[in-house]
Image 1 (cartoon, rainbow, N blue to C red):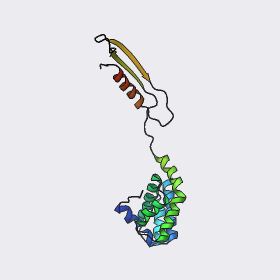
Image 2 (image 1 turned 45 degrees about the vertical axis):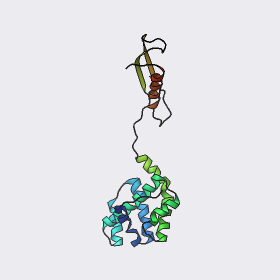
Image 3 (image 1 turned 90 degrees about the vertical axis):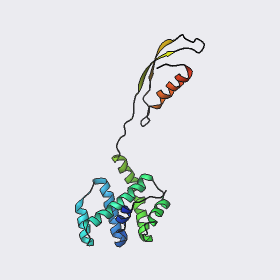
Length: 181
């Protein structure tokens, strides 16, 4: 699976070939540090002074790396797919290898950080339904009997959504009995 980078991200990453590989490695360290602790404008300003460029240029370069690393880590793309995704950007072979090494060294940590930042989605832990139905056996037409059915689910293992069981049970009841609502 290849990454599909927008033109904006490609523009942000276009700054990387203009600097030394040691600077790109430092940008990678700053990108991972950004994910851990958040943005620090002082780091961008210091790097911008050393490179004689604007702090926005440095910030965009780091943000481009952050996007490249987070998307790659989130999708757990293979080494080959990462290389192909970066190759499309037209970087030198040395820079491609450096970015690949940066990705391989940090992808587990980035995935851990992303999982900590992900919001917890709501899910049902227990679900109880009470149905009041009138049923009639197939052979005794017109003789309706009122029944109450309580359906309760048990606590499932963590992460399993419990919405389907009662619905499937109700469908089975509808198929087996003539149920009026």
